[in-house]
Length: 214
Image 1 (tube, one colour):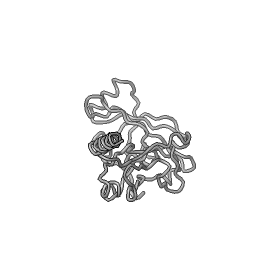
Image 2 (cartoon, helix red, strand yellow; image 1 turned 135 degrees about the vertical axis):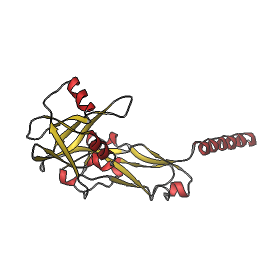
Image 3 (cartoon, rainbow, N blue to C red; image 1 turned 45 degrees about the vertical axis):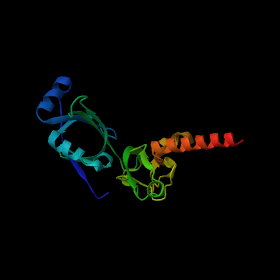
Image 4 (cartoon, rainbow, N blue to C red; image 1 turned 45 degrees about the horizontal axis):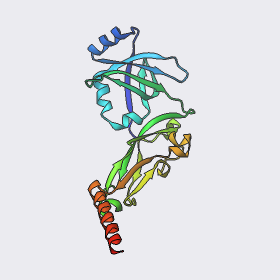
């Protein structure tokens, strides 16, 4: 992971809905830093900077360097609360990380070779994405920025499941730890609906002709 993100935070002593509203009016977003060996610490960051960082997909799956009161702590983004009707951040949660403790983080999926997949190029199929991210467990040093899903050999009416993903060393999928029944499809290629309907009609007509011949 070559990219790095820095969060300059300030401790906030006033808490409650009223205090949070005042912070947001002042151009800051309230949050909390918790976990690890430290106490849960209410913090705030400059809204303009945080919004800019959130535009980068990598921000969600990176170890963040949090500067607070002259110290730097490492953390991951655990939660974002947004206003239900307009794009305003209400609150965010950061969880401290330790080098020797596994973390659970949602990591984006990057799909490769969709247009050249046999099911698309030769079969005329359509790609359906069933998942856009997965939750992984790993040590902080092994946290991937994204997980690639290669469709280069995917045929028509075929799927890539969670168990088919090629994971970096030291990384496991949380969903698969719950059992084989959780091995859901990540992406698939299927015939367009119109083509599928036409095939069914042709099959039906063929059966009727066969019956008439008898």
